[in-house]
Length: 135
Image 1 (cartoon, rainbow, N blue to C red):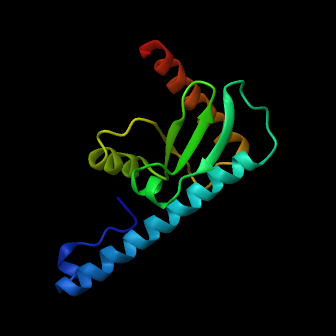
Image 2 (image 1 turned 90 degrees about the vertical axis):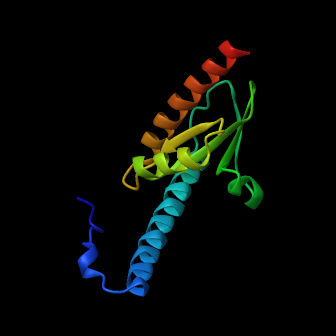
């Protein structure tokens, strides 16, 4: 059960329901922004870059609105990266962005930077191998 579970009978008016769900949305958005920040920080540290890694940049507002939180420049292809803080967030994103072609990463707030890099680079490497096979 979610920590936000609140039976419908406990929310008497539509206004209260809107405030309740707006609060959940704000908290989820803040959690997502923190996950993005931690992802970016993990790649600002010195680390052994794979041979295909060129640069990682945060998407601008237009790119972000198209589902690109980050763009990874590689020797093979530029990779769109979407950061989520939960599986539920991934499901919602996939519903809205069925045409997204990139890597979706779940970054939990308790992941350390080494672990973030490890899971991210592993998934990106797999994406690049799949891309090479298709093209």
